[in-house]
Image 1 (cartoon, rainbow, N blue to C red):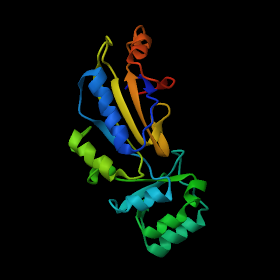
Image 2 (cartoon, rainbow, N blue to C red):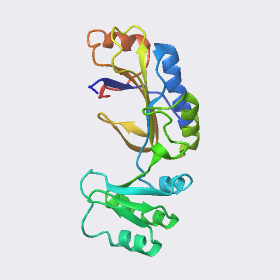
Image 3 (cartoon, rainbow, N blue to C red):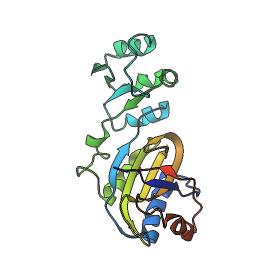
Image 4 (cartoon, rainbow, N blue to C red):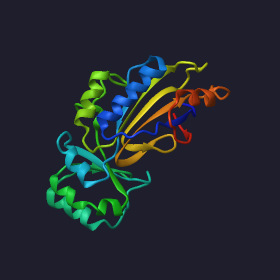
Length: 225
């Protein structure tokens, strides 16, 4: 997609609803036009609290290594014993183990963290998190996602024409709930919420002055979209 720069807006955001409202407020204040919410993504389950909440909406998922590498071929005795006892192993491959979700799996934490595993969920086809278009959703559907989110990680973007910047390419606002932007992606950060301004890829000569003129307290630039 390119490499824009994202700047976190450093303001208190006590909960997900406040963060969503602030993201929309930035669009209202600084954008002449914004596209519908783009690429709403549910983050991986990394805590027992997130897992218990996911049982409200999901019946299956995939355990994967956080590194993106292959699943450990040996070890993890408690993991395999629980899958056998609950008869929840559905399949898998070198990189993932598909399971039917079972409440007893919450007992695997903190071992899941120690083993550096995470649980991926089929959010894109599971209401209320399902995408109704190929790439996004409506604002009303986004409201429903955030209302159901609880402690789960989530992020979404709005491409927007930021008033005063000469190029609109990859400009907009990014929202991260129970997560934080690191470098070209979000990472789990349970309990933390953030909103970011993206100044695109073609505004190098003007972006510093534009950012200063917003009057916002901003974090350091991060490699963005």
